[in-house]
Amino acid sequence: MNEHYSKSLGLHLNYSIITDMIESGASVLDLGCGDGTLMKMLKEKNIHASGIDISEDNIVKCLEKGLSVIQGDIDEGLHGYPDKSYDYVVLNQTLQSTEKPDYVIKEMLRVGKKIVVSFPNFAYWRVRFYLMFHGKMPKSNILPFEWYDTPNIHLLTLKDFYDFAKRHDFRIEQKLTMTRAKIRKSLFHKVFDNFFTEEVMFLCTKN
Image: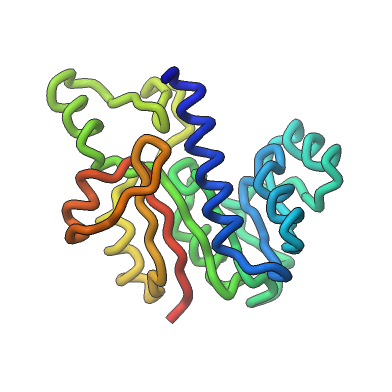
């Protein structure tokens, strides 16, 4: 399976999970919405979705799909969005590339009644072994960049996110672990999940 194809499968899995997770009629704000693929899937389920993206090209692609989108930098916050104005705020595979991830999550929890966050797990065993045996920054299907051109500036692990949630007083309601673009059965303690999970998705709410 080539790298591009595997990454595409992973993104499609994420989109499907998020679409299934959110009930029809809900309102969703998709941060870093890209070309609008997820928003289009949500719209087809009668979910009221809008998005924010920093890329002008992505804004054009969203508008061509007839989607509601604005251009903006989520690191600057969600000013203009009232508290709890959306049922869900989604940050899919973008947390690790934000400059101020703590502030971004704080703003998500303010604007959304629930938030969905997914990211690659830097503690995945293949990543650990690559670093151990090659002595270089790891590359994988979901972390395909070189150290000097990567957009991922705040890599983290499952354990980091659990600690972050506890420290910032929000609750993890659901966790889905994925490896090789497939959902894993999470049968072990979270320490072992941290070792065997390539990517994770959390559904969270403010305490």
